[in-house]
Image (tube, rainbow, N blue to C red; front, side, top):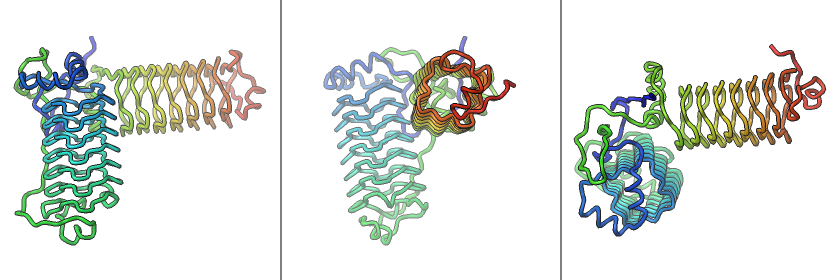
Length: 442
């Protein structure tokens, strides 16, 4: 029987999330109710305030949830891109790693919520209440936060390129190590001596003046620091079950630890080789997972578009129908992996190891595979249109039915055991015509 990885609460920095139970798989009954009728949903919540709201990893993209009561809800890694949440109540909600790109959050209440590592690019949050919210490591590039309340918020390591913070309240906010704050619009924003700048120092009247902000002096307070808060143990529950007391350990989703600390993830896998992880249908787009140990993992139908996975090891992994568009995969290992139907469009695979991998029906349009080992790989019916296989090792590879239109094969290694798109064995003449090198199979 497959075991799910057990993770220590030490690794789970889930500050400011609700104390609710989660199995890291949303409750379909709750999702259906929410999407069916927001007014009825709000009435039910008013009558059942202790009800557990489990929407972890739920797909709410483009949903109309204006004025919805989602206070204390667990929306860890929720997909809310393009959703309408204007005027909604998300007080103390847990939105760790949530996707909120282009989301409408006008005058939304997010006080005390956990938005650590959330993606809020291009979101519209004019007048939203983010007071005492954990926005550490959040992506706020191009977000409209005009008039937003960020009083006492943790914004450590957050990214602000071209964010609109006009008239926003940043008094008491902790901006230590925040990125590109000077590229944000700060005209008329409220700054105090309790605002901690990216340098780690307190804001001054001069800094405020130079950035078009308004400065005020307050009684000095210690900088805001969001402490780690563990999730409680998972449990079987009905939709109306009251919240149980937190436990001391949890059975948690692998991707949470993986996304937070690759080194800890690798150590855990090394120390527990008998444990398996199921990451099917996960959204890991744009994740930074360089060097991750993903050997033998089940990731069918997951997406890694734009992810940074250089030197990661996917040996023997089941990667059926996965998507890796524009991903950085330099020196990544896919030895003996199942990549049937995988999409590597424009991916960077220089010096990757794809030997003996199953790449049947794979899409490698425009992929860069310079120096990649495809020794004995199955590339039957794969699309290699405009792919660059300069110096790639194709000895013993099966290219039966593969589309080699505009494919670059300069100095690629080909042997008599290489099967050409026609299904016939390669010859020196076939190799020379394509700029490849015909060598003995070794």
